[in-house]
Length: 132
Image 1 (spheres, one colour):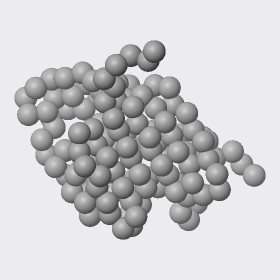
Image 2 (cartoon, helix red, strand yellow):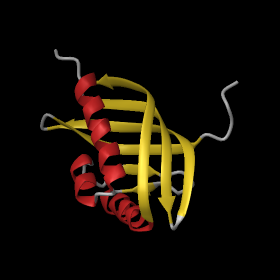
Image 3 (cartoon, helix red, strand yellow):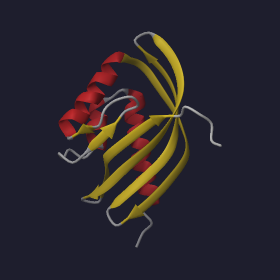
């Protein structure tokens, strides 16, 4: 069986390209559209179902002028039709006229559907302290 890691890494990179481009149509193509998808943005409550997740991206994109990622420490694991990526998001953003730099730890869970890896869960949390 072929190692799914390169395809999962490509799907993960596609998620960040859609995010950087503030492109809702591209985000639509990255995600699965089921009631079971979930998302946790830093400081937000758990969003459940594609409609809620999509609305969050729409809200984020509407208030964001620029978003640039340097994604580091990308680690991929998979079992069957599920794969997950952990990574560090180093983010430069301009939101509502304020420029900020932040580091976020993220876990992105993908499901292989019809041979394509689709995002089903994104969880991002701010890094508040250095590792011990």
